[in-house]
Length: 270
Image (tube, rainbow, N blue to C red; front, side):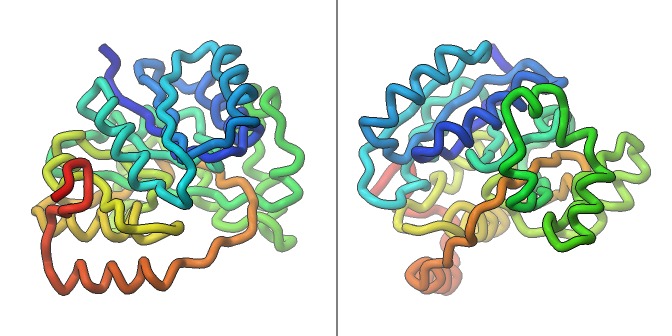
């Protein structure tokens, strides 16, 4: 049985996923299972996705649901249920993990505590230059000075979050500040997520539902959030920013007013 389950939120972009899977091939920590949480990839794209998964040297489970609009939380709940380990790491398909990404999350895992890492936001230019072969060869992990320069001239942002620290004392220094959870980069014991009934499936559209709401309800249930800044690093591929749904914002405000950690609209409903 593997140590941890990596759950990848996915929809339609097979070429993007190929970059992520290439990065998984070179992870320093190998004892993990991969679950693709597919929010309704179309029938014409599914053969390409299946071909990619067959070619990959990594054993991958594919969980699919019909496309009925943005239902990321629903497919994440299905993936959580299908996972075979008691430790879960969440990542989005448009994020390429650093070589030490999984090790960083596993090294610090602790019950009643959930952990969040950070990411470098790549420019459009660098994103377009990436290939699976470059990722396998460690192009991103070894190009810090180039990324810094790209940040200076106005492309990539948050490049300093790509500096990997080995030293425990430096890690502690850079993680004193509490940071909010990133839905694309966090980890938790499965039982702790089940205690709040997983993700609230009423949220539609990106943001709030897969991170802010989860953090609020976990903390309401007594869990502590710890940062893995400069430890669990990922590189976010360029794309246009998606607007936050006003319905999500309104729903989150109602959740905070109710002060209920257990959602009635999660893994079990009613």
